[in-house]
Amino acid sequence: MLHEYREEIHQLKKENGHFTKIFEKHNELDQKITDADEGRSLLSDQEIEVLKKEKLLLKDEALMMIAEFKKAQK
Image (cartoon, rainbow, N blue to C red; front, side, top):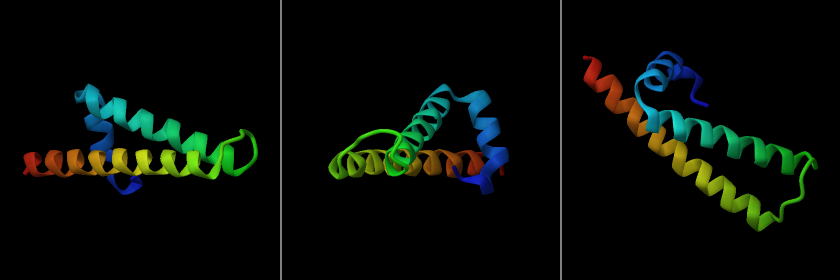
């Protein structure tokens, strides 16, 4: 997730427990979606859509935290 912010993510994960939690949850959801898409787990289309929406909300929150972090670094 968000490879272009690798350094900021690394710093935030060391300094911010909430960021670490949402980052890990995002990755967990991504794996569940991938597993369903590739047939390794059975989820309905509706369940997958719910997971995708939750994942997107987490990504948006992470992006806001990264932007705040970058702003504070200046």
